[in-house]
Image 1: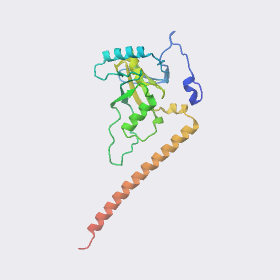
Image 2: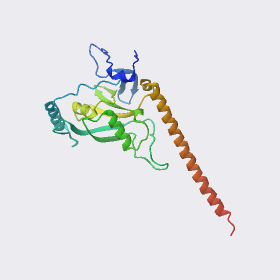
Image 3: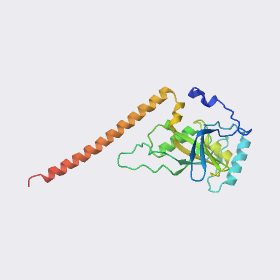
Image 4: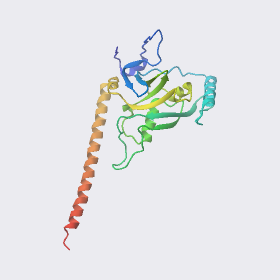
Length: 242
């Protein structure tokens, strides 16, 4: 079933969905994506488990994490209890993003690649999305994108949409360093997910799209105007009397 609530109340709503007598950590939605070997289920945004750990608990988990690391990307625990480390994010974008580069210049390749980010335990999902977009010079609104955590369980892969206020490094710490157990994916919002936004937010997105469309048209006009100017110069040279 579906429920309706204010967007700012979404994180305060909890739904218990029993399945075979158990509560799944990732609640599956009706939309299922199929891959060649496994089913990938997109699931609703889930609440991050309580991350209020004591300094001793954090120290123990960081030590356990670093003991299992095989790629030298270890975590560092500071005296104030804040820890830093690395996460890897897979880019899965359906279309090339709008960038700030001038026409004719190529942006760094983003789609399909794995990006390694150095972050702290205080960095949120929203900040990670902004950092990725900035890295690839993407000018589109961060609100157009969502970060998912991909959980591998048995023969299925569950892609759980994360809240902008969750902390990816904490999720990495708890899951351990193995990316076949937990990985992060950046995607555009699904069409149906726009229902979560308020009318003013949607209207703002439309204004952004109109602005991007106008910028593309202006760039196209400038390109053809420059091309026309060069042709006219060439013609004038050809027809210039000796």
